[in-house]
Every structure is written in structure tokens, then in C-alpha cells.
Image (tube, rainbow, N blue to C red):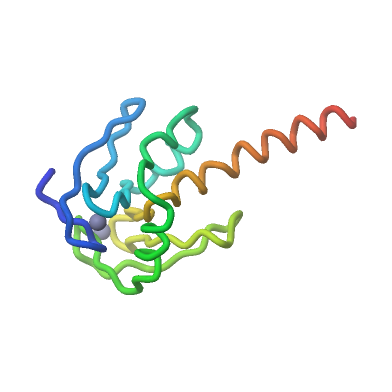
Length: 127
Ligand SMILES: [Zn+2]
Ligand SMILES: [Zn+2]
């Protein structure tokens, strides 16, 4: 499935595999496409932020882009806010549940876990 195009800049999406989970990353803007639960699965895996190689500034520019269509099924995607990190906006397809993260957003998304881990450690120390 390397013939799918980036929904933001029309660049080519290339397959990137991390811990047997396959995602599609744009060769130009470095945005990342995750199938349904892949983002959540990868978030739990150590080191997975290394797939997000893009420049945060570029990602922020593309984040401004409102209406995009799902690269897989071409349905208009819905802008979502991460429940735990309200500064992270991502796009989700209402039909195939794919998720689009702009460059830098997955690193940010993932960081929440590390912070939570640190908070947990402090909480245990205080207990
Ligand atoms: Zn792109
Ligand atoms: Zn879709």
C-alpha cells in the first residue's frame, strides 16, 4: 500500500515498521498515518517515538490545515483533541478510524506516558 498519498501535502507515504507495527509516514512533511489502534499500541512501546522524525515547526504549520480526507478511504476526517493533552490536535477518520499525526505530534503524544510514569514514581515515594 505504498500508493497512498499524504492527506496534507500530497507527498508519498512510506511504510515504517516499529515493533511489528506498520505505520505510513510522509516522505515530505513527515506526518504519520496510523491504522485505528496503532497509535495507542505504539504509545505503549518503548522507543517508538523514534518513528516521528519530523520537524515540529513543519508539523505545526500542517496542523493548521483544517479539512483533509482520509488517505485510505477518502472520507473527510474529523479534527480531534487528545483527552489527556488538549494541546494536541489530530485528525481521525470516522469510517476506518485511521489517525493522522503531524510531525512531532506523536513524540508529544507519547511523552504523556513518561510524565505519568514519573508522577507514579513520586506518588509511590510519598506513600
Ligand atoms: Zn505530507
Ligand atoms: Zn478512512
